[in-house]
Image 1 (cartoon, one colour):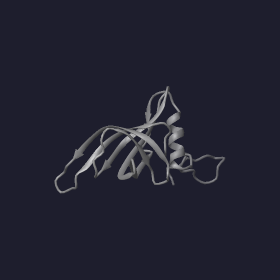
Image 2: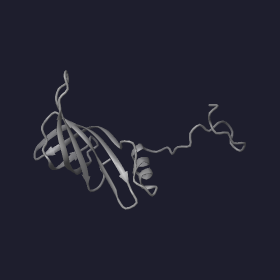
Image 3: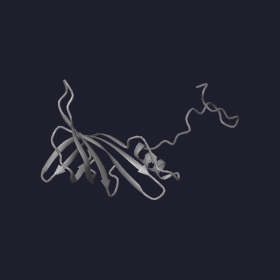
Image 4: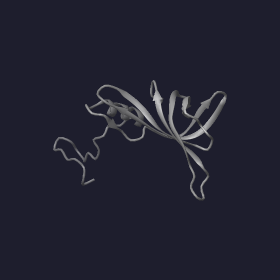
Length: 130
């Protein structure tokens, strides 16, 4: 507690000056403030699904929200054990939110002793789902 901020008008020690709110709300506000393009920490990191017609392909997602002076966007990477080709898909998160993504790049990652996985680069289309 000794590294906190002391103020003669406040009793006790103030140890944190960060806003207290859900992480997704803070990240979006932080991303919209400022003049240059800023990367905030991954806004979503976890399981998701790529919907390809009637098929739901499970993926691991690391999605990042970005903000610049002229635009706001989101992108990220996915890891899948099934093949996904370039094109547009629907991405579904565990909270039920869905968004369109464009698959920009897809490469197989084969490491000794690990099952092969496809590393997929995506660009979000429209509103951010997280």
